[in-house]
Image (cartoon, rainbow, N blue to C red; front, side, top):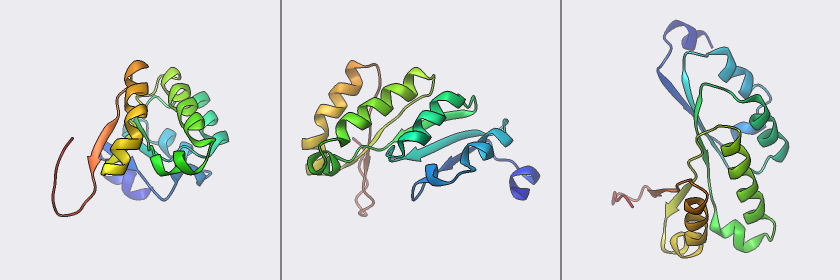
Length: 137
């Protein structure tokens, strides 16, 4: 916190692990209103996603609500929860930019999510896995 006060960045992105398990994460973002924040989450901590929607942190400029097709295949509840949280955060006024890593499996099993987001006015960010062969989708 001292470094953020001494030399505040223009933008700061918080990733993980899962940052929503930190009880103070929203307070940190609120404590620095002149910093634009990004947040990467898997969106599985339901009560914290709902708290985030209610708090409407004005300086949280992007939420990467990662999509994991393998979880959708494995757990029957996953896709519904992911869609619920994408809509909830979007309706709360946040810029929601879900992420899908580019693999053959992810693109095959994540196409429905790309299409669903587009139908709801949102976009999927497809990003390469760091394999030494950079590519953009």
